[in-house]
Length: 229
Image (cartoon, rainbow, N blue to C red; front, side, top):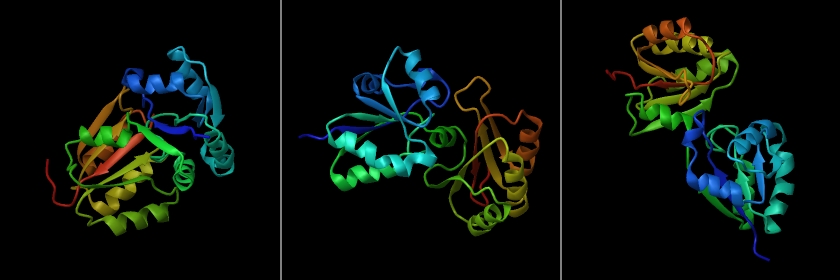
C-alpha cells in the first residue's frame, strides 16, 4: 500500500491574505489537518469554507501523538501539518513527526509561506546575507545573559523571538551586554494592523519599545558589532 504524504503547510502570521493558493488547495484535498489548537485552525479553515478532521499536535503532546499520526500516514492518509501561525517546525511543533516520516520513508512536502523572522529580517535594514536564528531563549535571566555573552562578538545578525511578557527584560539584559550603540531592529505584530518596526541604536530602540503597547509577538534582531545604518 502506498503511504500518504505529510505536507508542512505554512499559514498566515496575521494577514489572512498571505495564504497561498497552493496552501488552500492542500487544505481542501488532504484527509487530516494536524494542528496546535483546533480553535485557531478551525477559525482559519472556516474563513475559507473548509471543513476537515483535525488532529491535535501541540508542543506538550507531540512526542506522544507521533506514533498515531505516523500510522495514519502509513495507512495512506494525507496530512497537512500546520501551526497556529507561520511555518511549522520553526519554533513550533512538527520536528518529531517529520523525523519519523524521514525514518520510515513517508513522503514529506513543504508548502512555503509566511515565517515571522524571515519577514522581519527582510524589512529590517540589518545584514541579511548570514544570520543566527535562535527562536525563544530560555525564560531564566541567567540563561539569556549567558547566551548574550557567548554571542556578543558573533560576526552576523542575531535573531530571536520574544513574548510581550519578557520583551522588557530581554532588551534590558541585551543593553547591558551588547551596549547602547549596537544597532538593532525590534519588529512586532508583523502583517497585522499595528505592525511596527523599531530600528536604531539599542538604547534608543529600548526606550521606544517601552513607550509602545507591549502586545503581540516580537522579533528582535541584533546587528554585528560595528554595523551602522
